[in-house]
Length: 308
Ligand SMILES: Cc1ncc(COP(=O)(O)O)c(C=O)c1O
Image 1 (cartoon, rainbow, N blue to C red):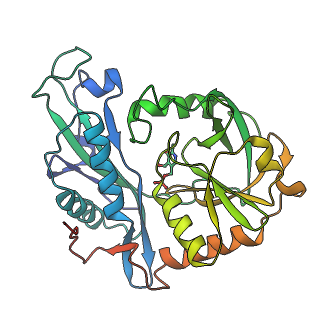
Image 2: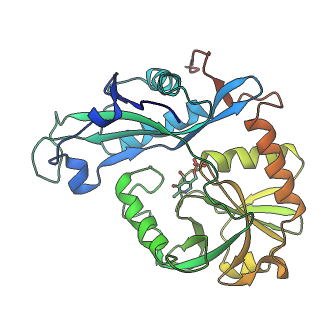
């Protein structure tokens, strides 16, 4: 337990209890915030942040999607994340950068000069999905439609969709929910992307209706480097049940094997398969710093982006 938690708030460290915001904050009324979820791992070479640059690039993309011009460069935001983890003295944690339209009138359209607030918090997080293999419920809610919003931006308002879907599993034995698109294709979990394994090939939902998951990209890279063929194509719930294996990927969930969907066991048995086990092992080796990888940024590093 750390004694005092600090929030990075608009460039300054503030004690968590003093990091407050107005009840007239635009984002509180209209969901106009964007955020990231990042993990710092305790590795054999010290604390390191997984895919920091990619997360801050997506953060910037999400801000642009809402018409926010970031007061900070991507490099500055990367450094601020590192500084926040250091300041809070965690050796492993979950990091939550958040940018939002602050107080500036009650109209839906933010003003041209609407204040933009940026904060970074970090908190301890163990396993997000605690079951070794998860039982999944298909939600009655469809995933937000790509023609209704910019659905690959990580916009706070989108998470009402995830939250309502997740509420359906309250009080049930299900560990997670799965959302379909308007055509009945599988999109993703409430906060994870999904993969299935069929005939030793790996299939994941293509970009379009899903969040462009950073763990998803890492899984695709690991799988291809391990010699597996990865297809990005649509599939249905029945394809999961008839697959040999299925798993979720996400920053919080990491690699989470799926045992069943709507109480139907994946591959007939619901057992964790060879491919999932392999991907999980490779992911763990990366996050523990056991293999050479550019996926980690150590707290002692300075982040530089490659500009063309
Ligand atoms: C809706 C949704 N899909 C997928 C993911 C996984 O994305 P990532 O691997 O970048 O954490 C998340 C997590 O942020 C999410 O909220």
